[in-house]
Structures are given as structure tokens and as C-alpha cells.
Amino acid sequence: MIYKVFYQENKDRSPHREKTKVIYLEVEASNELEGRIKTRKLVEEKTPYNVEFIELLSEKHLAYEKETGAFELTEL
Image (cartoon, rainbow, N blue to C red; front, side, top):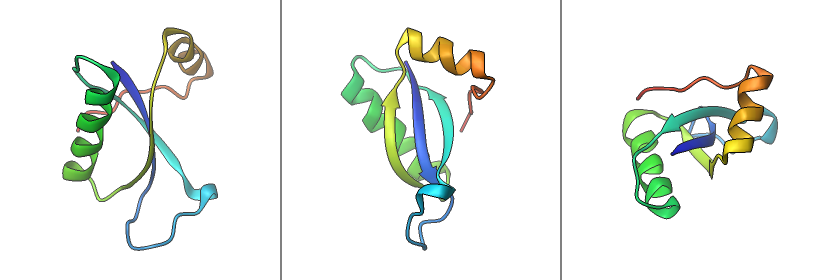
């Protein structure tokens, strides 16, 4: 499963929508909820990022992200 993670680079400041960034992570999970939990835990343990939202990408959404050139899997 591939998840799109919206985050702020710093936990010490208030979130600003204009500064939201995105990473894409591939996580092995049996269902969407388990995947979201594993993704959040992974990001919180390996980065200083403040996670705002985690979204599971559907096949169509993933195809769109790849077409726009924004898609690149991140390894943590």
C-alpha cells in the first residue's frame, strides 16, 4: 500500500498550510487503518516532521501522481 503523507518540517512551530510538504511511503499492511498507524509511527520515529494527514492512494490517484511528476517513494 502506498500512502501520501502531508507534513510540516518542524514540530515546534504552528502549522501553516502554505508550508505543507508531501512524502510517499510504501507500507505493508493488512488493511488501511493498520497502514495508517504504521505510516504515522514510521514517520514519527525516523523524522522530526509534524504529520498533518495520511492518505491511502488508490490506483487512479497513484497513476495521476506519477503522471504529474510529483511522485517519488521515500525510504525511511
